[in-house]
Image (cartoon, rainbow, N blue to C red; front, side, top):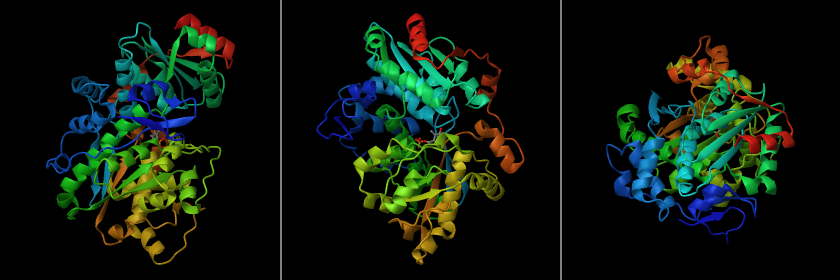
Length: 470
Ligand SMILES: *Cc1c(COP(=O)(O)O)cnc(C)c1O
């Protein structure tokens, strides 16, 4: 597969370069495959549908062709995914796609585990270790730390702002041993990011250490997230007659979004033939993308804190990939968009629980409310001529091309549940008056010893530490 760049279409490179570089330093652009080959209709129309891992293998194949042989790709996928995504019907026209069955209980495990194994594969013939530096404001650090833990040839150093992440998140990233360590920095997330960025531009340091990053713009994190979109759409396509009494429903996938990497992966899956009719881009108060879809003007802004904190992004980096794939007009046909404030998030968790008995986390809750409003009147009122008000929580005023499928009751929604509710226990308890059940793997981590190393917000000290300890 040839990879190009969102800012310069004359760039042509291979998968290895795209993965190892993360982004194109020369242009500041993001790598993107030149095409998204569709799976055969024979594969897509299998009933029952292929397993998650078989889908993963078929979808990954074209992107690594000529660089990773089939047997090695298959081993990477088996090793990355001892867990799967689960489709849970919660009512006749709503399915929840649980993406939290991985080790850190959030969807980022899908991307990070694939990336770790691919990097290790590309590093296998090097005689020096590759050092991954990652700054985190919470979830990314634990997914990356866990994904790279004990992966041969690689080391990970996680930087996080001391006292600014939740106690559970802190445990999840500071208790590793071996090749993964955490530095608690006396500063903010931006300070952590500055330390990492300075290290990457430090020629003296780079002459001594091989450095790489593991952030969410890496194409090897985006591609594997497309696997579960395909998988869930095929499961729902095959089961909807039994569950929803609708034959061949229009499938609308609802994506709680922050940096829009997850949604971009959904677009890739659709290009590859996933039977997804449309998407709902759902955000919290950080509504940069819903505002763009409403007004046509893209205005990045500082992020604000919300209960769905993994979506607190004011300048989503994958916007650049979305507009390299589609025009605004196409986006308005393909996406509905929706945003919800903190008060709405609490009410949505309660509403979902009262209506279906399902305990949803604050991120998934944004998706639940979006879908429930869309199917029960919000689209109808746009169709009837309401202008809508994009500055208020709710549906953005564009009418997607699939609106009639919903209005004619021919559509079902798949809501991506991006994290386990127990990761956000306090918010969920506030909403429904009871604590979510904690999975065993989270409970275990709470009992481990915290090994984080204190670090001043000072590049000189950070560099000395790297040189002494890596
Ligand atoms: C990262 C994250 C998101 C947002 O995903 P993007 O790809 O950044 O849009 C949503 N929910 C949870 C729980 C996350 O960790």
